[in-house]
Every structure is written in structure tokens, then in C-alpha cells.
Amino acid sequence: MLGLAEDSGFIGNVQIEYVEGLDMYIIRGRKSDVDRVVRIIEEIERLSAVTQPAIDILYLRHVDSQGMADLVTQVYDQILSPRSGAVSITPLVRPNALLLIGRADAIETVAAMIRRLDQPVEPTTQMRVFQLRYMNAADAEERISRFYATPTGLGTRARAVSDYRSNTLVVVASPRDMEEIATMLKGMDVNDSPATHEIRVFRLRNTLATNLAPVLQDAIN
Image (cartoon, rainbow, N blue to C red; front, side, top):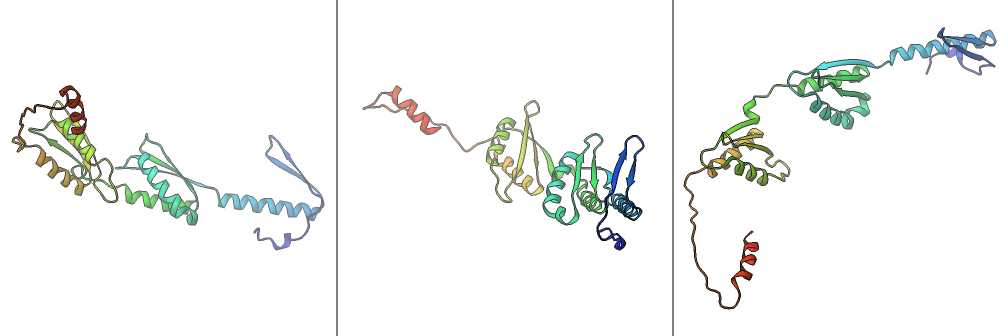
């Protein structure tokens, strides 16, 4: 490993004493053994300088550093880390940057991945504000949240927040899912409904109305 062919073989009795405050060693022994120990120490220092981890700060322009750190750490640790070496990825939040520590080539691999992910996105492709005319915004939020509560596979994923003052619904979703939600809201936000209310009176012959009413209500609910 050290590449010192002349240093092969057994080293005799050598005493190594570290002098605190002077940051130096005192080595005692036969001259040939002392020379071999010195060469070994010099080789270790050289290798330590070569393998010293690099430190880099990568500033992000478009993506939040915390979210970027979570995603890149997961992908890198699972796929690239065994081949490229470990890299510590720490979000600084303020400023919006990532602190990268590791081998220089491994850091460059991580930095290249981050640059490809740190891209701008048109706001209207991910968020849309729907101005409702007839339907209550809170009801629309509840229905969308319940309808898309458990997406599977490539199913629609959406987040909705209502504003009662302006009766608007803010939806965050992918472009394809946004079109589906827009169609859904268009069908629900209407003035006239085909549903009609009807009142009928049933006269009971074999049971009390007070006993049957809660049973019917539970069945309807």
C-alpha cells in the first residue's frame, strides 16, 4: 500500500514519543529502523493529504434546499454512493444552499445531479386558483381532498385550500391532474341542479316513528 519496497521486513524496537505543544514526535531506535518509521509517517501524511475530503457550498436558484437535500440524499445513497463514495449533504436553508462534504469527484457527481434538478417551473403548471360562482369553496376543498385522498400508481395527486372570503379554491397538482380537477369543478360549480327535493309522509302501522327515525337516518348516513 505504501509503495516502499525497501521498507519491507521486520522493524526492530523503536520508541515513538509525541511532544505536546510542539506538534512533533521523538523517535528512538536503530538508525535503519528510525529511517523506515520516518518514511512510513511521511507516506501516511501524503496519503492523508490526497484523501482529505473536499468541501463545497452549492447555491440553489429555484428549489428549496431542504427538499432538494432529502431527494438527492435518498437517490445518491441508494444508487451512486456504493460506487462513488459517501457524500454528506446538508441543507443550509438560509442561505438557500447545500453544504457538500466528500471526495472531490463524488461531490462533482452530486453537484451535477443538483444542477439538473434546480430548474424553474412555470407557476401556472403547478398551481391554479379557481373562482367559484355557485359552489361553496370549503365544500369543494373537502370533496377534492376526499376524492383524491388515497392515490395509487400514477393516479391524481392534488392539494386544495379554500378561501371563504373570495370563495376561491387554490389547487396544487401536476398539469395533467390539474386538467382533471378543472373538469370536475366545472361540473360541480353550476347554478341549476337536476336534483329535486320531495316530501312524502308515511303512516306506520307496526312500529313507532320515534324508533324508526334514527334507524333510517343511520342507513342514509
